[in-house]
Length: 613
Figure 1 (tube, one colour):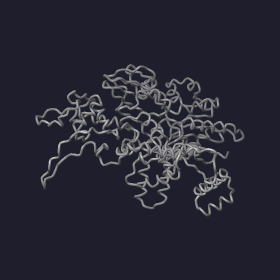
Figure 2 (cartoon, helix red, strand yellow):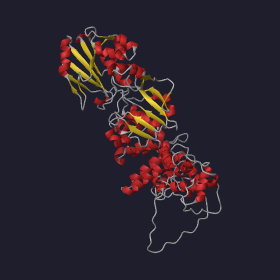
Figure 3 (tube, helix red, strand yellow):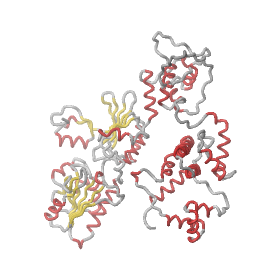
Figure 4 (cartoon, rainbow, N blue to C red):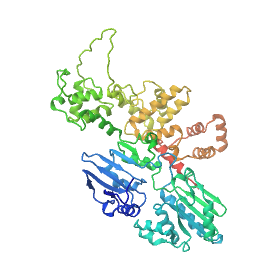
């Protein structure tokens, strides 16, 4: 039933929450155990507990837990993630589980920051206050019992006016211990034209907004004003129109839907999970849609830790050190496993977990990992270019005709091991020649030798091959920024074919090189490939037409608009026209080659520009 006056157990919460629980629910104040941000951690039944601010309503905190085994957990409660939290959450990165406030866990719920929404309300109030010729206006701000206090304070500071609230609401707000807000409140509705009204007084917000103009008209007539202007601050009503927030109007009554929320928007949820990088995310809101929500975070969690935890189950829980007899490499070959039911050693467990067939190789990995089974397994799974130990293997036993061999798929097949049949990011057979090829490709791409056109042509031929090697066939080496020529060559090769399988192979090879040599450029490459500047919910577009592009080409190449138009009629593509005239220009020094990251950053900057200047 939840806490009430009969509650008899301790409640750990902030001081403000303790005040509210005592007042609203009647729980004895002596049962409250106050914990506030900045306080030292307390130990509760063997678990260390501390709190940090949740950037929600006053008193809201996030709980941080550390078990005696060292596992860390975060419960965000109701929370709006902000970059200012990173410092206090630094020690809880890569936590075991993040219990997350998923109120707005949907890409369509990506709304502006709180500061922008607050300023929007302030600007509307100040602007209308200045229009004395239109008569008096009553401002109505909708809110719950607590919450939205930042809007109240901002309007008070901008106008210098009192804020009307009912005595009951004033009693709630006084418990929040915000002195400036308390002094700004009044219970006299005639003393000010800024009123704090209850939620839904201006209209229903779910499942869509339905304004209550009847109620607003009653307010207008009751207080004898010419207009009413209402504000409904919630993320649910945001319609994704950028800075142009929605409004409803009927005669002298108007209500603005302000996307102000004290819960994280979708983009902030992504930033939060990306920063914490937990092993697991557990939604706490809309849990019926958990599988759908978790798809948004599957590439942001710490999969390696989850994998290590899974592998540790083979040792009975905690990571286990190998015995010296297991680690030492022997020359006798694989020992015959006894059938006495004796417990398997670390080598046996490592071979079972990874699918290794060689005891010597398992011993080599364990020795390299100093006997740590988890670390040895990680060496196997995470090192794509590992050198296998050469050992003499016993001959395979012949199988009688008609008999079948019953076996189990090794665990490595689930983790992309060496024999998994997955796509290899690099082939060891190319390691000896890769240095020479990379150097030549990088020089060609950077204009320091060879022909860039020839390098591009060679690359176009290579990227279509089934035996494409992401190292030796790439145009740059690891540690260097990925050249834009890598994308341009793939795009040009795609433009010359209509075969779907061939197009897929070209893109596959293109991304393989990026993942091996420049993984930081992969996201930008994906967006450039699909012709966008970000995820769909970001609504970022270039909004640049052909006329603007033509003007830029004319200025850069010095070609008249008439010649440009004639060339366009001949070529049929502005890009080909630009290449045609640019190739006729000479420079005093080699032009710095474009990189994928730089190109995307400049396009992203253009997408954020606005205005006519």
